Structure formats: C-alpha cells, structure tokens
Length: 420
Image (cartoon, rainbow, N blue to C red; front, side):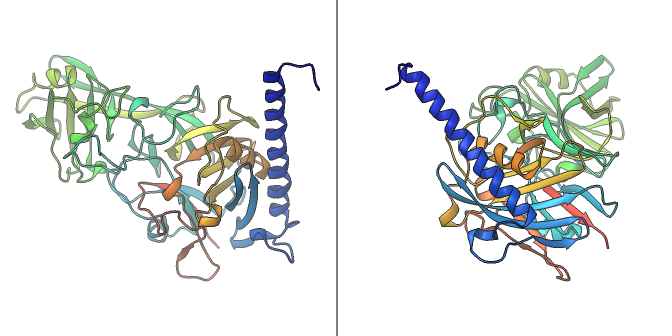
C-alpha cells in the first residue's frame, strides 16, 4: 500500500482519469475527423464525413465519457475557402426567438448551431414577461445589436473563473475567428451634461443605470430591464423607474414604467432605474438629447462582422482553470484553430441513450481533440441544435435530437454560408 496521503492518491487518480478521458476523446474525435473510425458508434466502413457545401463538412461520432457515451455532431468550417463565411443567426429582433432551422433557412445558410444563453423564464418575477433576449453582446453584419447584461443577471451555468458576460466569439473583417471581450461605450448628452449609458437592448440593466432600446429590440416589454440586481437575478423589480422616448434628437415621451411595442427607426427609448431614473426625470418634452453607443472589442482592434456571447473554456490549447468536471449535460460549443481559419461547431445529441452528455471539462477536451486551440461554450440542454443542408436539398435538417423532443426557439446562433 502506498505511503502517500489518501488525499494525494485521490488527486492523482483524478488526474489519471481526466487524462484517460482526454486520450479517448483525442483518439476517437481525431479518428472520426480523418475517417479512421466508424461514425455513429456503429461497425463497418469508416465515415470520412459529408461535404455539404464547399469548405463545410458534417460528421457525427460517439464520445465515451466518465458518465457514459455521448454522441457529437460537428460542422467543420474552413474559412480559408473564400466561398465560406460565418454570420449571426437571429430572428430580426433582440427580444425574440426562432428555431435554428427556421433562421438558417430564412438566411440561406447551409448550416448552423444555436448560440447564446438567454432570458428564458421569469418565474421569480410574476407578471413580468420573459424577453427571450440573449445574455451577451451580439453583432450581425457589422452592426451592433446589443450589449451584455451584468454577470449576476445571466441565465445558464456559473461562469468559469475570470470570464464575464462580455466574452464573445466572433469573426472580424479579416475573416479570422477569435475569442474577445466586448464592452459598451456610450453616453447620453443633455442640457445639464453627459450621462453614462450602460445598456443597449438588454433584458437587464445595472443598478442605478440608464439603458437604450432601439428598433432592433423589437416589440417585447422593457419592464424586465429593471428587475433583479447586479448580483441577484431573482431580486424584486425596481420601484424607481423612468422611461424617456427620444425621436430625432428631442424628447417626445415620458413614462414612469417601461413600456412595450415597436420602436420606430430614428427613435431611442431610454430606460432608467434608481439613480438613472432620477437623472431622466430632469428631462422635459422638447429637450434636445443625443445618444451615442458602440461596442468596443478589448483585444483584437479588428471590427467584427459577427459576434455572439457565451463563455470561453479553452485558450491557447489549454482548458481554463476551474472548469466544471462533474455536471454532465447536452452541450453546444465552438472551437477555433490556432490561425483562426477553421471553426468546429459541435452539438451533442439529446436522444435518451446519449442524454447524459459531457461535462464542460470534457467539452473542452473534445474541442481540443478536434483541432481547436480556443473553445467557447454556447447554450445547451434543450437548446442544443445543429442543422445542416444535404447537398441539393431545399432546406436544412436538424442532425441531432434536441433533448426536449423538438427544436427550442432560441434568440441567436452561428450561421454557416457557402456559395458554389
């Protein structure tokens, strides 16, 4: 019997177990990508994958894990091919949801996966409408759609240490995919001075702040933006709120409670809570007000064509410290090659025989095995969906089995486009 302390032996055993999982994932996923192992966990001829469009290949394969067998569906996207590009799937409004397949077909994409975590329910705020809006920043076709909610207001599993709701995966005008962080830079100019703008089309605003809602938000109620606190999503809604409507640079409307309904082009609705509400009450009808906002990327300096939220789980080939290695679930994730020119979109199968899924640590290992240097976790569970179009088919088909038995409407996703 070893003379080492029992705790040390347990840690060593855990490391050996994690290494064994990584080895199996690397061997199996790598073999599946090269066609050296059968797909779908069946015997017979190896499956090299299906070329669904120039530069885009679909594969599926079993992944043994500590909790059982998971089944992975992968779109391998080659951005070195000039015919290939990525974009944001979205239903046309921030506060709205649609299935991945419907968004992909509507956009003319050859494939895609679901995206960010989102405001799915409001059981802790009776009478308050769930907006369906995503947690993190979103950019579509180079246009800023929204900024990130406070960390304490997010939906989804706990963030890994050192990550925030401002983390994004995106593709810049240089056609390279990368991980980055996007913060909101904005202000409201009034006759009394300048006020910081701390929200853009968000379902939750920071305490004491002012947020802007534009036509991009949609018709959904804005009340949810004043509920919860920076650290407690379920805290009561604020009782000190105010809303100001600015059209073509002048105040044209005011209300004590945030409203709902379409916002016209050229119009911005400012919503304030606590100190932000008190500042907005100083405005009067006809006052001149200027509103400025933009998302700023923290590291690349390259303008983004598209970006969406989630959280990092792999950087420079190494898993982030503190990744959960206990809770397994159906997951969706994206991996990026070291040069940013290859993207691996992965969604696990939610069929009963595979529903145990993978832990976040196992997802990171799976992405690394596929060839990713950086990895990003997207929404999972009933949201996990991967759709791809068969060559010559008029529409995409869902390749995995959503764990809820049918596609869940989601706020956004990653679209894959390829022209012949």
